Length: 427
Image 1 (cartoon, rainbow, N blue to C red):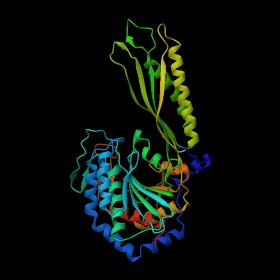
Image 2 (cartoon, rainbow, N blue to C red):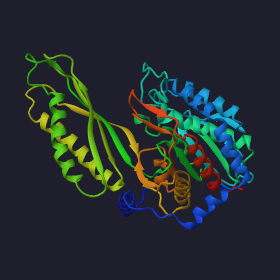
Image 3 (cartoon, helix red, strand yellow):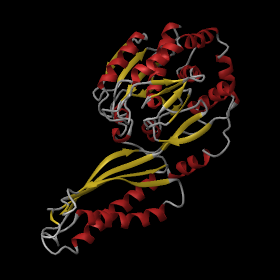
Image 4 (spheres, rainbow, N blue to C red):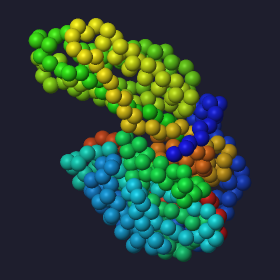
């Protein structure tokens, strides 16, 4: 996939907008206030409230289907049936497992995407049964992102029930591979070169109405494995030790990375997982680490990547320089994640519309920020995109204690519907 990255100045600008007051242009405020007075939209808002109990049940049903990244098929089947029942014009699964429902437009000049992701961070064997205590629902994955999927279903159901059609076609989708080592697999496929063109992307994945993601935090992830012959800790002493090489690489990298990340757009690094070795009295035959590096700036990400790779080479050379017998160690460097950075201008129509809607429905000032979401791909390509919240109140994402409370959860669906209508040229 060919990706065009924005200039460094755009990323520096992104860093500043997340802490400054946002200006919502009056024309977008007026558009929202006009839309909400439309009798059809008032009926649609009422319908969203009337199906609220079923929307929550859909969320529970989807939450209780295990779906680690790369294993979303079973949930995808159930989600596809929900979209069919909601009145989609057609539903299909693409080559990588994305589930897509078409709502045809009256003119079909363009297509835009509205989606939540199917996968969660939890492996098979995790208890994903939804438990209720008081007004709170608990289950791994309930907010991230099974609530979002239920919102997608509710949106399609509402538009079908109220016979609302935008001029543009809409794809309502559940996408694969958003989390972790899924590496935005579903989005990279949808926005690949030569794919059906998507004019805009609305991702539902986050918290409150006023929390608006208009920037993508890029990331690079590696699995680095140092390899040797291995042997007895006494009898084979003097051969290369992969653990030593890995340690040398980390020691070389951290001071350089620390100095580099102290200034400029936020850039981070983490030696996240370590492994290797067989017993206390054995020289390991391999030593591996998973490493995560992130930045709001593609240029900063490029530089810290170079620092890391040179440090891996340095660690290998230092250990090979002191071995007394046997062959030199080798290293395998596998890139397991590559998410591009990008930013949507706060003055762009999609972001202005999102802010105006959030202000109207919540009464709070919208907050723009950067995140690592499915929108990263569209951001990096300069395609209009935004990530909006799934509504209600929740917490503990990516933990076994993840929770959600249906506190005005319907407002997020109303927000998304308004945004769809403003983006898709209605009425």
